[in-house]
Image (cartoon, rainbow, N blue to C red):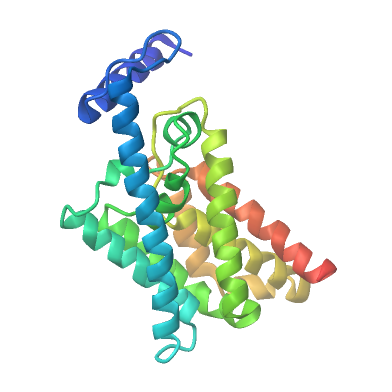
Length: 245
């Protein structure tokens, strides 16, 4: 680790602690009773938010099935838009929703693995992700079925988010947000199925989505590890679907 990196990490710790009014960590990473109470209160608050979010997602899926052919995909889009609106109206704190190694793994705020997958702050980030999901989500829901689509989307959010946080251990304080990791997982299934069943001809129809995801993946502001993690999980799942199920 370079000296600049160490200075950056120290500054990140100071900024986090000052914002949350938490006493600085000592060398053994011990905190006093006040900081533990603050952390416990915030964790319970957002764990409750996750439970409420899952309930809202179920309601969205149930209601939207009467209006949309693909209610699972529509419910994901609706949840992302809802969370984006709540952040913009200052009803949710974006910093408390992101997924990082330090917050999710070290501090054991596991709810962040879920909340980060529905969190966007930049309108263009939200637009690109939802456009990609709209392009590929309905087709994959028709192949997997609504229950299968929801199951796999949940799987890649949980497994992909956890692995992504673990792999970013060298930059533990940088949070990741956005639905693109899960979308890459859905896209990974499509790539596996299309290539196995139709060869390269099955992939060319998704060139616009491929271009968008590539541009986002190699952007310096994007969590490329999350993209590749989701993609690999999707490809493996697609292979399992073809050869073992």
